[in-house]
Image 1 (cartoon, rainbow, N blue to C red):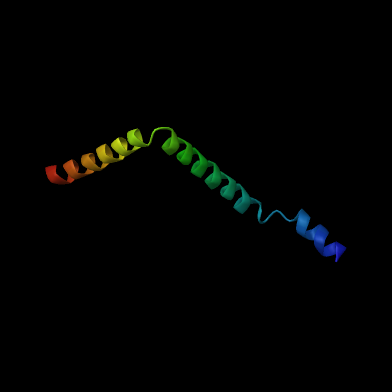
Image 2: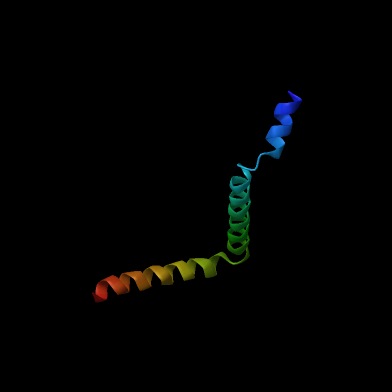
Length: 60
């Protein structure tokens, strides 16, 4: 049992998954902080971005 536990703790195969998980958690926390700080500005930015897309499709 100890041998299995030591081998599990030395393994590095799951390390990338943990790093990506931490990166996603950080990005989610950042987005949440921005939305809580000024939700109306974010809403206006999203509306403007979609309007640019609609205008680009309408121009072609």
